[in-house]
Image (tube, rainbow, N blue to C red; front, side, top):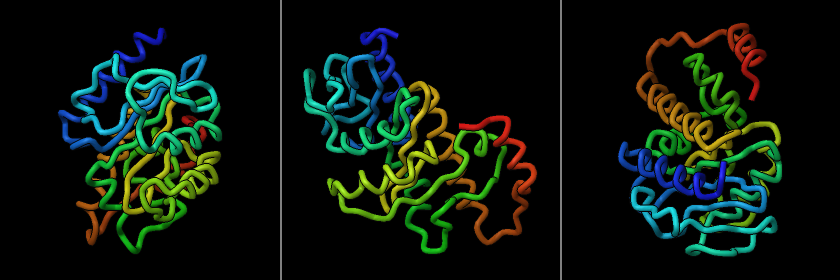
Length: 210
């Protein structure tokens, strides 16, 4: 994919998520790996209003080359890429249901959501919880780096999901699956629920490893 096509796809999918209420205000950010660096959505711009020409370009060392100033959470994306060299894109949202789950006191920090559906297991796999750090704290990048080598998706406590994918569409679709599963999880709390068995989960993970 050319850089121009990547810019257009970022703007298109960012607007799609914004229009469907998966992100709001100027929250959320997207990045895409290029042969010579990265594209990052700019800081302070609503994802529904991104101009492809505004999108920031960074070199291989993370230095800003062109476009508007990149997201304040650039360090978060770069930390994820360092541990996942095969990933081509990353999506980070403050999506409502995922954030709500990240605030619960009784979730399993090693794997936040249970295997409610096959598609969640296939697209997300395990979802570790990254401890809370205040916005902009570089220790957050260290914490993400420690978990990213084993999982392409993590949930930041009291913050939101960070999801890597082989392509931008893969990352977006996985993020959407995570948000819908978080919604289901909250709807089912307190109800007698049948989740997928360990054997069913293992079979799915063997066939659809991420």
